[in-house]
Image 1 (cartoon, protein in one colour):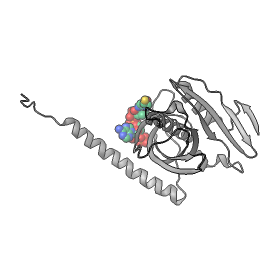
Image 2: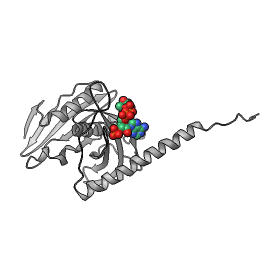
Image 3: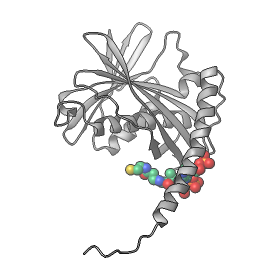
Image 4: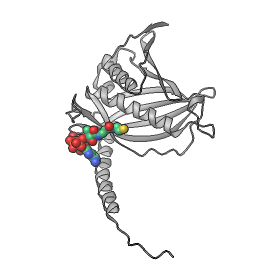
Length: 233
Ligand SMILES: CC(C)(COP(=O)(O)OP(=O)(O)OC[C@H]1O[C@@H](n2cnc3c(N)ncnc32)[C@H](O)[C@@H]1OP(=O)(O)O)[C@@H](O)C(=O)NCCC(=O)NCCS
């Protein structure tokens, strides 16, 4: 197995991740691992009391990395370490949210070829706990693009390493906006959904975009609700 430091196959992706981690307060020492035709980047991160390693697969058998399919999809796998635990001993929801945001950033930024910011996130539903010691894989995909915005869908799979059992922990949707050097929204490349799954994701993302607009309107109405002060005595 070959191992070298600061060696990156997709500099754009890694530049984006570096910027992200740098903003989080720590310059990462990226380690590239390669085994035959496969290669991974290991990016250590540390923030506050938490630390971990982001594992980014940077290659595919046959070197298919440069196809559009790979440019709009990204996989990261992270081992859940004890420093990520909450008071009940399971993984802190905030630790997962942070990783989700990192994955959405990396996926959106690589696709857009620019810096991207998080506009919104929806449908993060923790129906089952994620346990310390599990391996969590984030499967991210740009589902839909507008002019400057993108919907990044992330499917979270947890794996009990010893038992080799897997669970679908949750799926959620980030809206990321590509911005230029001055922080203003900038155009993203077009995306042509090809496969049946990509077409379905595009259609569903359009419906979710519409739903977000409707929800936004409803929340505005709720904010306008006024109540008169009753006599509580
Ligand atoms: C994201 C941001 C750049 C958008 O700026 P803006 O002035 O609203 O820009 P625009 O009106 O041109 O909108 C940009 C895109 O966001 C979408 N958008 C903006 N507000 C939206 C809203 N409330 N709901 C859904 N989509 C919205 C627009 O539809 C547009 O998408 P499109 O270009 O694909 O059509 C700006 O809101 C921002 O900088 N937010 C802070 C982001 C951040 O720091 N995130 C981390 C938080 S800790």
